[in-house]
Image 1 (cartoon, rainbow, N blue to C red):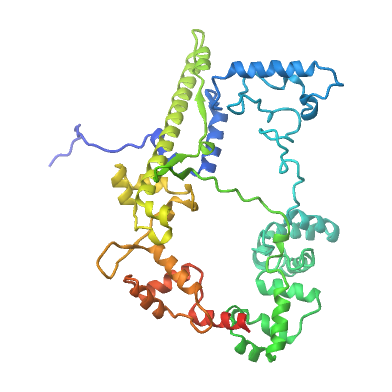
Image 2 (spheres, helix red, strand yellow):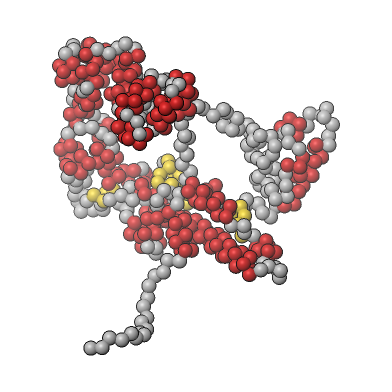
Length: 494
């Protein structure tokens, strides 16, 4: 059979992910902090994008405020005017591009030359006027340049300090440090010994035992009994004091004295110094109870980036005298800017839609608490709002809801169901976890409940649950076993 090239037409259907569609999907799964950073990048790279303020139509009010400020600046310096008391900035610090700060028409002084000591509301901002707290790394570096003079050892010390976490622990081994720096392990260990003498005491330890040893050595409180205690910290965590006393060859009273000495130490010495400030959770939506007894779901406007497309600038640049390259570039910028605005709007609408359906499905939780939470999965919400499960999954990722019962991640409301013994409606796994927590919180030294006992009590409430499931839920709550709980209660009552 002869082989020869030929042309053949074939018609097929396929889903093509355009860059714009990929961007819209990406925006959907970003948290509000990540979204703000992404929008900032777009504002810097796209000349047609502007930051919206929500007060774009209030130019006349801003101009009037500017004139009023100019009048204040012309008053006599002897008159105790408001401008003299609150501002050191010149009268021309407000530009026509500024906008009013609130509905009342008060001027936004946040860009004035007063150094940012006053917030938009005119109140003193204590955070902006407080000196930054020295971090642990900075504190260790200050001691390094004073105590270690050898240039090579100082470089080794700097490398080790950079691998100390915020808790004060060294998160790299001596062997790995020596290999990466190309020096001997003995030299790295020698420098580490010097760093471990820095303040705070216990810093640069490689584990909890070493951290406690460094602090006890400074207090001259190390002996064979204390070393035995430090070698068996797992028994101390389990409150197995009888076995611990036997291993340490101590009486109960002597053991309790050494345990008290350990409790006086700091297991995380680095926390005494400043570190990177954790970002506060900013909820994406707010849920409030209405006068009619229902629930209203609203977007948090503070987390929604406001961007505008400057079509006037586009028309000016792409005028009759513009070349083809300029037109092509500006047209692409306009398309990207318009698509970003639409994607942000669609993202906000989708979040609100999903949040509203979650509140609808879990209305009993908002009314009566976690015991009344219903089992819920992504498919139920997706079917109700006619969206794909993957879309709902992206929306619920890193999104938070401010409710009368606290701030919860969207994913908190999606829980598996546990069958009821009477064949009725399934019970939420989160509700079962809450019931286990309540039952254990009511224990005394003589009424500690085993996992089997918890199964019996839950079955008495109509919940069909296995022992291994109870154990799994208990461990997820960070609750120790019944044996350890009995020891803890016995120790606390002693």
